[in-house]
Length: 192
Picture 1 (cartoon, rainbow, N blue to C red):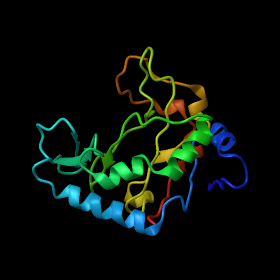
Picture 2 (picture 1 turned 90 degrees about the vertical axis):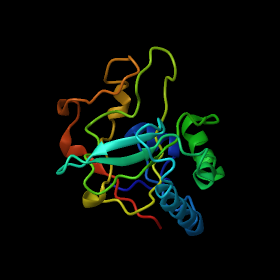
Picture 3 (picture 1 turned 180 degrees about the vertical axis):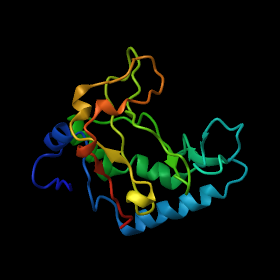
């Protein structure tokens, strides 16, 4: 399923499906710079440490080896990542969805290393009992994603059901009964 934002308004498409795939928002030069910075950050040995709370880890599915997975946050150490977090075209698109200016709540750079376990079914919305009441996730591909390369899978319309786990501020895996697995859409994305 590929959704063309020229067919309907961004807001109505997002409300209907709970996600959008927007192609061509960034230039090839911008994306090349982002990819280069991600490779540079992956070589920053002084940052990648189990004692650094900005680093997240995943176990390798076969060996159990602990693999570095993510910088969370990243824009304070990655100026190109910061550029994308506040990119004018992205900000305009998000303002159209929200019908007001969007605010950056969180930023991270996820590497999805080969063999890493990955995440089970969950909502990116982790419910607190007060703030925030809504947010959305923006995925910008640095490498091609498909079924064999760590693509994220989304389920149209599920976001309209609201928060499906306890509103306690913790991460919760959702039972598969929460969704209709046959309706999953794999976010097959390319760098250019």
